[in-house]
Image (cartoon, rainbow, N blue to C red; front, side, top):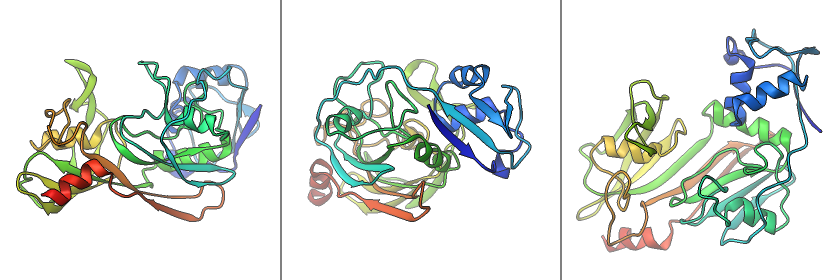
Length: 298
């Protein structure tokens, strides 16, 4: 079993229920955290936690991660580029058309399967389907993401995503001209009640904040830089639909395009603090050929 020890819980977590907080940080089901609590695997200052316990501030917490069930991801290679790797993390440049991990569609090939194929060890948190996964980008979005190789690094990096301190920036091509050259969209996002596979602006959704800036105007489209302050599923795509200017090629929130076979979105910058050394790390990815052709041709 692996142990994660937190010597002081940050003050901004005060008032959160421990089961809900750990579930949201680690992005694992709340009932799994509650099972850990029932089994005595989570202690607060050496006392077994209760699921209803609310953080008071600066407590010490120990989490014992039990051995995962046998991985259900079969190692299979894919066209990924490992940008950086050390004992704790691995940064990957993902092509469009590849999922980060298997999901409801039971994809056989993914970023996770490719890393396992190449002998990269991934953290147990998220296993058996999502070992090492602290965040995701859509299947048809290209670009950078980081995965973790041990549970301590996973937890420390997951906290940065939970606190929205990660610098994530995207380049996108939208299907029309935006009214303003730059702006900030702050609209909550939740499941689309009419289409469970899609998301929408909903009153009681999760808070979502996207900054955008037009970099170049093409004849019919705009090339836009996006900065995410939150990381909701399909966030940029939903917010652009809200502005009436969906991403080019986005056939879920807009319409298909003869110029590109997927939504024109690329995660070009990823910045964070190393989960173990605390050093600032920044990575960049070049625009892929399908998007570059449109930008240069416009």
